Length: 586
Ligand code: FES
Image (cartoon, rainbow, N blue to C red; front, top):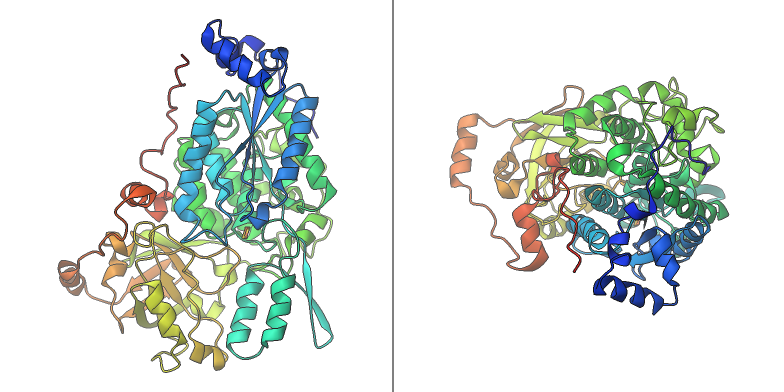
């Protein structure tokens, strides 16, 4: 697993290490730097003769998906020491998806900046990133890309399956998808509060990220497809001993990468992103990836467009039989061979000469891989869904694009015309859907605006608007829903998301009124508001944007500099691959 196979690598010399600027300095500063490391019990030769490897750890007491990462950091340290490196653990913003309000997306770029600046301001020769819960994967990777030192991503791993028994029938349940499913049944009166409390204590029964194909598993899978994890790492359950061994192996391998000077800019190419897109589609991955993958590519100076995603979505069917598109969980995916097995099936869509952190090519890594359960990882001619994990829509309502996940939608709604019921904010929408006299039926199109990157702010996961309570009681479980928000990757339903430009900056979504007719035709990639251009122009003249809610701090910075969804929601001043200068040491 660990042997380096780089052809004729030009090995870095000890004197070329970045950390030498701190520790080999002949002046008073070098004296002070070495002194302070010895204060902590290290020997002079440790800092003078070993590469210093940072472990960015996104552990916290409020990040249950990362509850085990302090232990895993110890395993990474063990690997680094065994390979002759010097490990340093650096805590970073943990961004536990469920606890952070208003949304972790508000802080993805904050984490990326934190990682980049930690690595730049400290004597780090390389980095192992310990992360996994939704935004922590793109956040840490974006920071590491912008710093461009040797990098391995060590995925947190997923939580274990749970079983739900009702009426003598036992079925597998996991986090996210089933949370929404059971809550809807509770709202509809089909589930009692005692049973709900039992589920509350069981469904997330172990440390690790959500075990459906949510954003976490989508993004760690993408990290692996980009070549930034050890092969197979993203599919290992967090509580499997193989996960601990993988963490040790990350520590061991990163030291080799220091001497090979194997940096993200050399490993990750446009072809690597082609592989990432193919994996996203075959996994039935989260729509959130559309935002993150464009932002990640942007940090390496690679322009990815929504059209690139749509094109891959049209070619690669959903093959991983995982919630919400299928009916299994990540633990089953691991037993079926995990991501390498899935990549083996989609080899025709991959750029096989791309390299991974091992130094080997994707083709070499996949040479002896097999699928172990074809019910979980389907062959190309027997997919879970041919509808695709992602489609990009355009029209007068979304000039710069919007996305939908056809594989998790209701087929009859993929071509639908209906009347809009518009909500200007989340609070208004929540009050309305609880009102059992709300004027709507199953063909109504629910529209939420002011929920985009600038408007919310932070583009929260509000796009899976709840079904109105009165319709839930009538048995309705899906409706067409439109917004400039995102949706949790664990959720399902016919939800048009990421409408761009968003309403708060004057996108056409701002001009929709109750009763307007909207047409969706996913096959034609069309999203159209049946209102004349003249009328829309008149509404635009009368429109005035919402007042900014926040006047200070990070949120203000965010609203001033975040880009739109189709551009990845990165900060405008962080896009591109120009490196910042190294700090002056004096
Ligand atoms: Fe952390 Fe789902 S809440 S991965």
